[in-house]
Length: 115
Length: 113
Image 1 (cartoon, chains in turn yellow, green):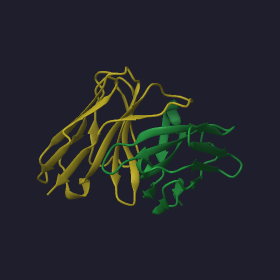
Image 2 (cartoon, rainbow over the protein chains, first blue to last red; image 1 turned 120 degrees about the horizontal axis):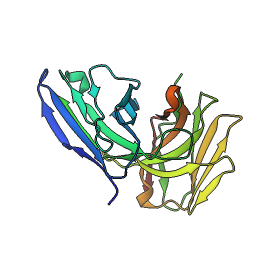
Image 3 (cartoon, helix red, strand yellow; image 1 turned 180 degrees about the vertical axis):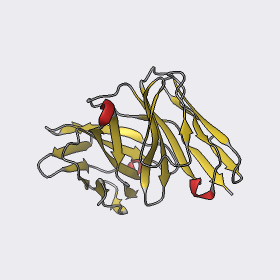
Image 4 (tube, rainbow over the protein chains, first blue to last red; image 1 turned 180 degrees about the horizontal axis):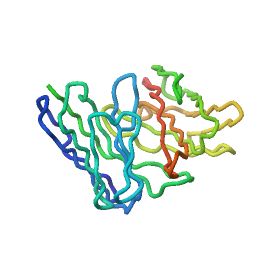
């Protein structure tokens, strides 16, 4: 089944403890992206990747890191989480970059709470 | 001003009603347009792309007006299962040819029995 898989689904952690949220897609998509969703603010892009070893900042990159060593994986790293990073996180992928009506496929989400 | 603006609702409509959502976008260079549906606490799912000529998928009709920078979604004969948040999404080619999706905050629909 074609899908984007995120893990974990739920995570409660303490301030300052490094964590990684994994994202993997099995559709050979070039483009992958991370979003956070907060009430009243909608989905905001954190980082995106156009292909292997190509990553760039989105609208709210502060406090996050990403890597794209393989096409299928795009982990989100929080080196020193803080309570304002408590949010619902989504990974998404799309077949290609460039112009075209390619929608995104989203993972099921990771609900992160930083205390 | 937000790049993509939607009326947050909530829209509460009876089963069988016709309901319309509107969305405006600020960047005239926006190139692709979509409606996504998001159920509570779940991931957004692509409902339909929006084409310049307008397009229909069953009970759903999407329209695009580039001159007014306006997108609409019409749902006919609403079902209880249509209850969800509907997200308006536009894409823009940024530097490096990356397509950037910008999401509206969503319009909440509840279809009542």
